[in-house]
Image 1 (tube, one colour):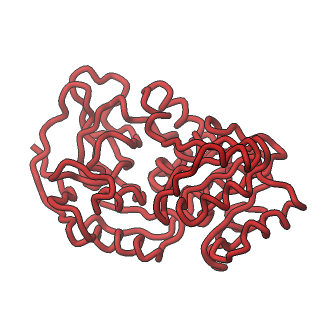
Image 2 (spheres, one colour; image 1 turned 180 degrees about the horizontal axis):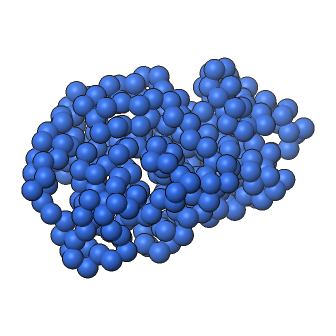
Length: 326
């Protein structure tokens, strides 16, 4: 029986509540695969769950995604074999570990042209971008796309991929330095949303035209002004709440702002079906292979330094993707 290191919390709170513990890992059960994890992806939802913003039964592990090499397969698993490189997300909490058993139906094979670090840096965030750009609003060439938090992990991928799809991309970020990151990621225009007049800057950048779709992961600080930036019959997509939940509105406001559409989607329902999940992953990996989506790795931490990972993210001291290397 293998000894695996993993992160657990027994109570919600600050980053120091996370502990790395060692425990026996049984052989994979029927339908499971045992992985030696080579790179673990960090996502801001991990912080929300650690703090209890999204309460979980305790004790619990943390982490939604990782990349690894198959060490063993359980009974009934025939699509993977030892030595295969795979990635997963939404396989149950507990990705913060060096070895782990995962349901085979939640795994996707990684093509040879994508490295472990690329996959770990891009998978969860890239799958989020994939459904936003291809399902929530299929972006077309010539459309105006407004992306908030464009210097973040998902934001940079959205900028790159939307640009590759032929859109005119406006990215927003909270400082001049982060606006430069958004520009480097492919935004045609980058606007500092910490400035009160940022919606006017959006209109100035487009010659007075509003966006066909607004992707808003900031929430409270941007949502109402996002409605002002959407074109008539346009779509506002709220998919995160980095500054706090978006305020409640009366449906009539959508009519007054231009017969707008509003949605609050998430990545997991879009990938609940294993076959659809693998189709979406193949779309993402093809975009990576074509160079449309590139990994921007801002920091690497050891699993033993997991407290520092969360502290850096909460201090907004990171840009792009953060990797945890077991």
